[in-house]
Image (cartoon, rainbow over all chains, first blue to last red; front, side, top):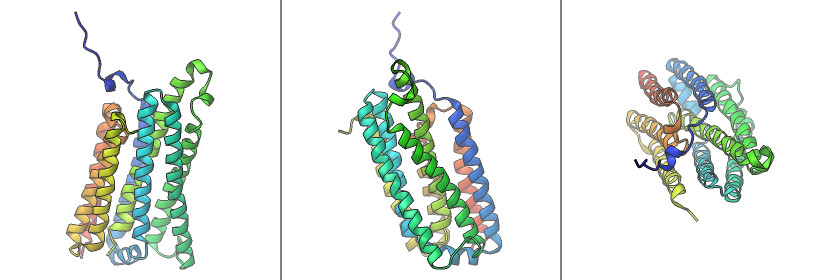
Amino acid sequence: MQIAEPSTIDARPARAPAIWIFIALDCSSFGLFFFVFMVERLGQAALFNQSAQRLNAELGFLNACILITSSWLVAWANAVGRKGNFRQARRLLMASMGTGACFGVVKTYEYFEKFKDGITVATNEFFTFYFALTGIHFVHYLVGLLLLGVLAKGPQPFGPPAQAQAQYMKWLEGGSLYWHMVDLLWIFIFSLLYLMGAR
Amino acid sequence: MIGTDSAGPRNAWLLLMLVSALSFVAAEWVAERHIAVATIMAIAAAKITVVLQRFMEIERAPTGIRHYLYGWTFGCTGLIFILWWLSAP
């Protein structure tokens, strides 16, 4: 009896649920944050809209494009890593880090601009949410960038040569999922803070 | 240089860039805010779905987590729009 060849996707092991559980929990806490933001907005929509208009939507859009591009490069690194092409995977991860670093530069400039205009976390409720949401996201981003840096070193630091590649692929998949989550959260933050009250 | 394995993520990247631009245009240029915000939130949900499916390969996640993350995406989108609508001028 002939057994059908499994497809590429079936042949890959299912991802360890730990990283998925972490992602689900982290998304839940951000979801709660979004909900509280919207509830607070109910009573003071005019203030929230006026404050949102003081944000630089162009920079928010630029950062969305940066994270999407960085995420794509990581997905690509995963695809070539699965084929055993670790040299190209490393190059793509470094490119992803470089692109991702631009997000930090833009965000830092944006914070600097706000402080220069006298806008702080205490300005009003909108800006308290703005600094809290983007700040927590920024911490996630920094952790993600650090992970990409470790992964960009290739399989060698992940154990003895016999097991290093398998270990590395596990970490590459987990680290990639984390980085995609950073991108995914920015999609909601960008829509909520920058676009909803843009006009 | 771009093989078949990377064609999926690449197409997803192009789509995400395009709809991000659409979302930005809707926010800046659509005067009717109900339409603008509905478009922004629909695009946000679509973008997250694309990231989940094409970048994160969510089909390989445990079933419960997969359903939860889809529920989170559409739940957040719906709730945000309803709460915005309640305070809309």
